[in-house]
Length: 380
Image 1 (cartoon, one colour):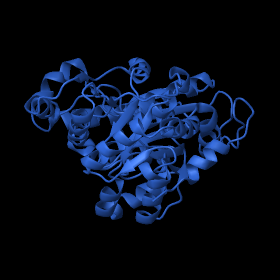
Image 2 (cartoon, rainbow, N blue to C red):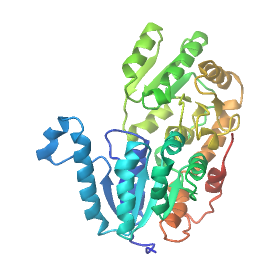
Image 3 (spheres, one colour):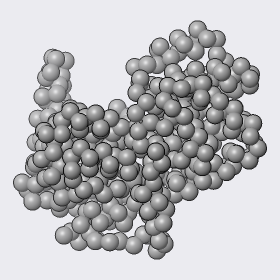
Image 4 (tube, rainbow, N blue to C red):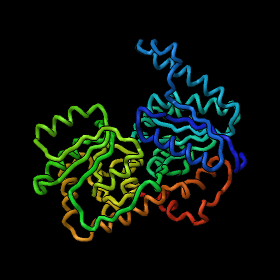
């Protein structure tokens, strides 16, 4: 078991760019661990090859082989100087090219291996590949997931115990502002990919703008769907729609503070950090109930949830929040409590336990009631 002071961690996860929730979580976790006095070695799962070999990346298939070779070489070197291997795991090729080498090498090197699994498509991946990946899960000393949704999927498909360690939100960066009067200022902060169905949000906005001519929609994100979505906005002659592109994490608090409603149309999801960030800033969350979202938010209590692809229901929910007195403050106050469960003070004791550091008190000495609520939350 590692010492609870000055422990050495090899943290494996994607580095930005490309930008994404797992890359952000890896960065936030590295910062939090360093603040605790840990020695953190960060190993990007998407390393750039040496400069002399970069020209070879243009050859089909060579880029993957080069990155895998560089990753494995750096992995073996890094293992010599750490006690704990923390690998941020995802589905599909990432699992085979990043997670399997990390878990296997860590086990051979007799390090404590912790796997944190992310991904809203976990059920489909594990259903197809359970026989191949089950031994890898069993090799890890601890398997964690950020939500009860993923924990249930892993336990059902793989049959290993899963401990819930929620994702981290930098709560100090977000200023909570209660919206007593709600204006139709809407925001979506997701990648512009089909999985997140930003088209559903735009369709809902079109209905809202029929009633509220001053309604606005800001879209923060980039992706393969951007050109098509821009064409839809132009074809439907929608006003006040702004495509902001990818924004650095440091700019998001300012963006949240200027809006009143956070809309999310995802078709599959796990633990969307953008919804938690919006809750921390006091926005009203209106989302589909895809995947793990109902394990975090409860319809009518701390958010309004609708069925995936039902853009009419999404637009109706927006109108309800605007028109029903007292609804927005009630939802945002309850959602704010959920966001507090993602502070480092609450995540720390759970993470330290799976690291083998033993039960650790929160930094402020308080109990862990918010975390216990989030860990057990399941509304579906």
